[in-house]
Image (cartoon, rainbow, N blue to C red; front, side, top):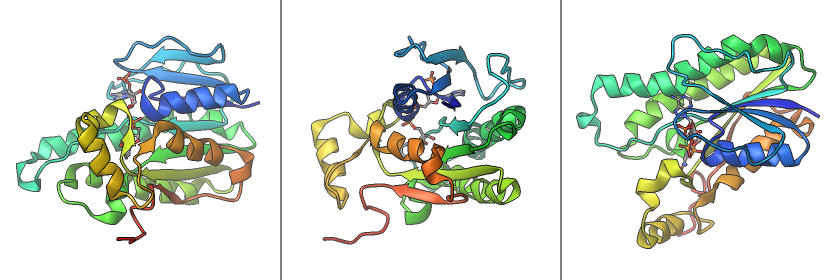
Length: 233
Ligand SMILES: NC(=O)c1ccc[n+]([C@@H]2O[C@H](COP(=O)([O-])OP(=O)(O)OC[C@H]3O[C@@H](n4cnc5c(N)ncnc54)[C@H](OP(=O)(O)O)[C@@H]3O)[C@@H](O)[C@H]2O)c1
């Protein structure tokens, strides 16, 4: 059985993934930032971590990790001209620099594993090109580039992949889904006629971490109800 580090396991996709991995018999070291969370399973161990801190402490981890999943992200949708340079920088620090700092701090533990994998999260907006998404797309586009570069550099020892979801019903997306009308309109935008669940995305992450994905690296996996590629209307 494997040991995984989930950065951001207190909410949304990371929380769902922690439970799935623990239910499958794995050990999960999950972090929270602001949402103090009770463990939902004896194999999920929580620790507090803010990826924006200068020094990240990982003294709660074992010698060997089989995977790292980096969840912190944001969805700030605004017209390009209203976004300050500092807003772009803040997003970049959370979504890209945070991921880099975490992985550099613990990558030696992944190197001790025979099936090591890293999973990042991008967004459908990077490929699709959506208005008002410049802030999030700038950071997530960088994360997609980081995925491919790291996948090449660490092959064959560590696989690195990135999931690009469309709108998924988690606390991060509350402002976009806080009425029945918004939920319905957003569901109808997708060829598969619903919005995503945290479990839809966690399923792909669990697969990418597993031996079943042992010949997959450097990929951007679109889990988006068909929205990025299908034209059905
Ligand atoms: N939901 C969507 O519609 C959607 C769509 C496309 C892409 N994504 C991407 O999918 C990923 C997961 O999204 P989600 O919807 O599951 O988000 P979420 O519900 O907001 O969960 C984010 C997690 O990251 C943690 N976190 C936030 N800031 C942090 C910090 N400074 N230091 C350490 N941890 C921090 C949060 O911890 P606390 O709660 O404890 O503060 C939480 O556990 C994100 O990268 C997001 O951009 C989501």
